[in-house]
Every structure is written in structure tokens, then in C-alpha cells.
Length: 192
Image (cartoon, rainbow, N blue to C red):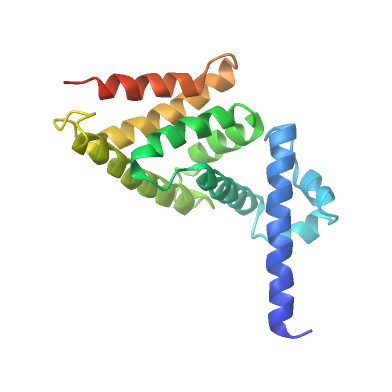
């Protein structure tokens, strides 16, 4: 098999690993999932699995990237509906506590510039702030949200609220994250 065929096989195996990791972490939780668990799910040894990733941290950063790809499929393309899409993702997150744990822990660890997930989180927040800022501006243009509010600030607050709600939910699983975020958006939309 030529070099291109080997590359395609490697990419396919990497994708299989990431999909399996999403399932295993969602089921077992981040704290109770080892690299060995993920490797076993795809028929590899730990060393074989880590051949596809630079480190355990790089593997988990890529798992989060894959989770975001899956979540993006739930996100409406229409800027006017992005907050509702974010609320739906929060509703879905209640069904995948292991992935919420992974996100919360890695987002904190990634504050160190050398961490494998640092660039992922930096880019993720920049994109989400921009996209939610567009949503805020669209709501302002429709007269649903006060034009006195700074769109980027509101976008940042929405993201911070979503992250904070996930942390509170991990401590108090009965908390309805989606309903709280929906309430915040509704309150902002009532501002004269």
C-alpha cells in the first residue's frame, strides 16, 4: 500500500479512537476512564493508541475537539437561533456527565500555555464569542435586546454562565442547566 493509503488508514483509525473515547468517557466518566479503556474499545494496546496522539493530554484535547464537532451539528446555522442551540447543547450535556467533567477539568488545566489543550480552548472561546456576538447583534437589530448592551460582553457572559452552570451541575446534578441559561437569555431580552 502506498504512503497515501497508509495515511488514510491512520486518519480513519484516529477518528475511530476519538469516537470510541466519546462513548467510553460519556459512559464511565472522565475520572474513571483510562487510556487502556479507550484502547480496548478499539482493539489496541495503550502504546498502540498513543501512537496516534502525542500524549494522553493531546488525546483528551482531541476528544473535546470531536465533542465540539458533534455539538456543532446541533447548532443552528442561523445566528438568530444560536443561543437556543447553546441551550439545547446544555440540555444534551446533562446526558453525558463524563464529557462535562472532561471539559471542566481540561479547560482549567489548559490555562497553562504549555498544555496540549491550550490552543484548542483559546480558539474555541474566540470563535464562540464571535458567533454569539453575531447572535446578540441580530437580536438587537430585531429589537429583542437593548442596543445599549455590548454584544461581545453579552457573548462572554453567556459562555461564562454556561461553563459555570456545568460546574454547579456536577456538584448538584438536579440543577437544570438549560433552564437557567434560557432564563438568563430571556432576562437579557427584556432589558428596555
